[in-house]
Image (cartoon, rainbow, N blue to C red; front, top):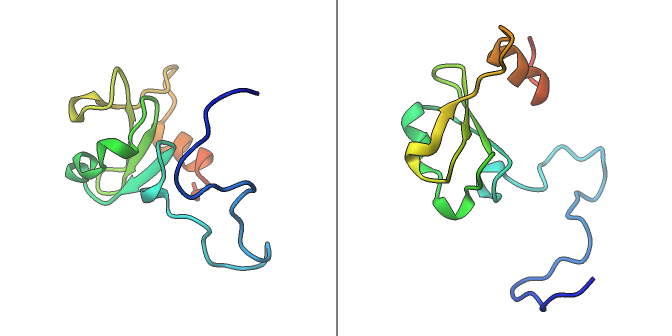
Length: 102
């Protein structure tokens, strides 16, 4: 694999807790790039820094029990309500995907 050397704090192995039985997190979702996040209010979607957004990332809004996805870019206007199609409920899908109880 070729490429330039990365700058910053280089991690050459996965970041993990000392034991799989430890109950503290090894990272905070709100501090990662992309992936899935959860916020309390719909207005909090715009508070996610653009430097942590990637197209396709999702965000669960607790206030409205709505799943949003960044589609078409990473601007505030690119947050759209997730649609599963086929009449499926986004609430059920989100809870199944992200480990919540039905």
